[in-house]
Length: 241
Length: 288
Image (cartoon, rainbow over all chains, first blue to last red; front, side, top):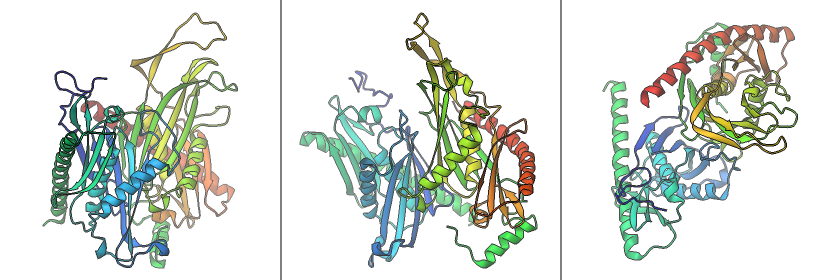
């Protein structure tokens, strides 16, 4: 199947190095301490953060840092074919773990010993790149909750199809079976906190693809920063400062 | 669930007794209602509804299926509700299952009528394509995103909005098949039939706190309830379904009184909802 036309356009009309449209909104869940909706094209996720609060199961309490918990769930209607999937299947558990580890890298957990922070991400529409979208949404929700972080983690994926590196794969491109590199970075500190790849890829090409994904992360970081600045300005206005 | 001090409890109960609730509403006033349609691109119809701090999403997906042998001239509708952990941390893992089941069952009772499909708020005959052979299966999925009381009414409203947003593809039936064979059908991806939702009821939940009952209770108010009755009423003022929740017993005469109040309130809610849905549909057309 042809994923890049001779004119250099992808199936959804994007250029190879073009990202899908981003949209973010803070404070979507009124009862949560922090929440955000994040959209990458047709992929749409909601993240809600509860905490820092008392640890619920005493046995899990950590004496030197906060306990971070994360749960990833997909809505029944999120995929093209409707399915009723059992809660806590292997894929969800794995993604929950990935998100937790990525967020742990940026939250300053040592400032909040004996407490717990819950991050819940809910996928409303899945069109490839849910992993990245969830991490971006979680970052925004954590920032909205005012939880101290050393940087904003952002994530983006890139693939390699028809001998072209492609940024931000959608579902059709993702299921084509080519390599899919998901990268999460701390943009200010310039560090990689998440790196996952399936399928095989020569070293030199991998470098290009990863570079592309990193550029994508930086673009997402810029956007997230803008959204947060805008939100802070609005809060400032409301307080009448 | 909701941590309240003795003083706060008295404040809520006293406010309800004096017809001035903690957020300034009267006993039979709703919180601001917000409706947005077409939020899920992959579904045939969808809507997001907010009642104050409560937020739910409903989506409708139509699939071709076989009608059941007991009702060959009717389609099938199934309703499932999920409580997302984003709404409350206790829904993590399997924690939300019990509430999800309770809400799904209440919605089925309020909207789908009896087993035979008689008295249903949704017109099941309109979903039939070829009697006894092919029909539409409607899957209605509700998702609770944020919870601040009165989830059932919000879900009912979201389902109504999602169904009025639903386009069911037109089906052409290839003729000349023998009566025993499964007929071949051709689903059009251009022509859609609008789903008729005028007969669809709205759900009004009356929550009894002390000697009085209120509509659209918040979580704090729900924590003080003795019992709640959810009544679904259609446009003609007929009762389509009823469920009671909560531990305390109710006097039969009180139930009858609640029903008449619900009937009165449902008219206002129905009108408000219809205008919100129309506004949401108009806003969506402007966008596209």
